[in-house]
Structure formats: structure tokens, C-alpha cells
Image (cartoon, rainbow, N blue to C red):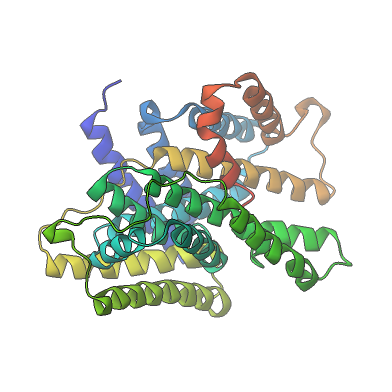
Length: 378
């Protein structure tokens, strides 16, 4: 199907509005507004959705209708969950788009891909995993533009595919050893005799082992020898490379530090703190770029429908289940005629539909489905 330009422009406007709403945590009703805008973006981008995204979006609509008829109170927690992940996804994608035009990232990308493939793989995987501890999904927004810059300048190659594997595996290893991970938190909560540091003493080395062994499962690059460079792409002076790395690390520390301050001193939820921090840094960088290079267009938010449908939809369903759990634990019982809670029924349907839809459509969204729920700690 042909993409309608008007719908793309409208999705971009709605995406920016949802991002602003998600960051405005001091406004009453911002969660409902953010979730509503996200649902509109998904609806307008329906023809661009992947099969698994359409399944999840359909479940969200069903839960909305059934909860409105039978148990509307669960929608509050569902909207809160969807708003949190919507703000996080949009802010990280906005930061990634802005960083993609950074000269420092281009310098870092070129220097990174001129090195040995093993060193590059371990650096990207361990670096992404380390950044994921304070930033969670925000680490992708910082690291991915390095690979994107390389692909834009030199095309896809074995080196870029190995780099992408390193980033994905690094992000996947973070829940194993991050004290902020929902996996660690839930394990310690469900096993009262287990101390968090006892668990981390085993899980952190296991995560490092996982990343190290992953180096054996990558494409063999043709050569690690230095490549020939065009005059405009010759190696930069060492001082310039070091300066770019220091500014990048300072940016990561700034986002991590501001997220911690907002969470610890101002009472922001951690997902909200990361959202506001990434958005603030992206705005400052964008203003700086506009001053140095006037006329640059604002990054488009038209292509976020799949991410919002998969990750935001999963958070919506999870929030609905959490709301039902709290209500039932508070001695509230639904009348017998109502049967299963709507969101529980929809999640059962989701499981059955995924089993029925084995094949290409399931494989397309499998990685996103897996990473969109349990790996994101709030």
C-alpha cells in the first residue's frame, strides 16, 4: 500500500505532541493524553505496521472496549504503563536522530570501525551493557547512531552486522547484572532469603561470560587490515578522536546523572527521569546544530508506529494486568457473569494467536516482543 504523505506528517506532529505530554509529568492527566496520542499514531500508521504489531494493537483495542464495558478502573494503570514506555521510546528515538547528525559520532564511528573486529565487538557489547544499567533503553539511542553513520557512509557490511549484534547482545545482557533490572528485582522479591548482592555476584560474571562467548558467534570479517581511505575520509588526528570520545562519554554521564537526580531528589519514576533527561539533552544538541548549521529540518517522528504498537502495547496490557491483580488482592470480586478480566482474556488470546501464527510474521517481531516487556525496568 502507498504511504499517504498527509498521514506521515500528522503522525510526526502527534509523535512530538506525545513526547511533550510524556515529559510534562507535572500536568494532571498527562498519562491519558500521552497514551491516547500514541494510539492515534498507531492507528494512522496501520498500513506500515508489522504483523506482530498489528496483533498487539488489536489486543489493545479489544481491551479498551471490554474494560470500558466491564471494568474501566484497570485503564488507569494501563494508561500509566503505556505513557511511560511511549515517552521513553520517543525520547530515545529523538535523541538517536539528533545524534545521528553529530560530527563527534561520525569521528567515533570511523575510528571504531578502523580497529580490530574483536576489540570493536567487545567494546560495543560491554559498553552497551554498561550504559544500559543507568539508561536502559536509552543506551540504544546513544550507541546505535555510530553504526547508522557507518552504514550511511559505507553501506552494510559484515563489520556493521557484527556491530549490530554486539549492541543487541549488550542490551540483552544488561538485565542479567543490572541492579535496576526487573529480573533482578523480582528474583530478590520472590526469594526473601536472597540478598541482591549475592545474586549480582553470580549474575554479573555470567553476563560478562555471555558477552565474551558471543564473540565466537559472529561473522568472520574478510580482513582486519587498515582499509584505504578517500582524501575526505582519512584518519583524523588522535587528539580529535580522543576529544570526540570524551564529549560522548560526558554526554552519557550527563544523561545518567540527571536521570539519577530526577529520580532520587525530585520523585520522578525512573522511566520518566530517563525520558526527560534524553529529551533535554537532545533539545540542547539540536539547538547547537541549528546555530552551527541553520536550515536543518527537524527529525521526523512518522516512523514510530511499530515501536509504539509493540512496546507501548505490551506495556498497556501489562499495566492492565497489574491493575486487575491489585483490585483482586483487595478483596474485590467480579460478578460471575463477567467471567475473566478483559486483559487476562486478551493475553490468553495473544498467546494462542502467536502459537497459531508461527512462521514469518512471528519471527519478524520476536526480538522486539522479547525485549519490550521484561527487559525494561521502571
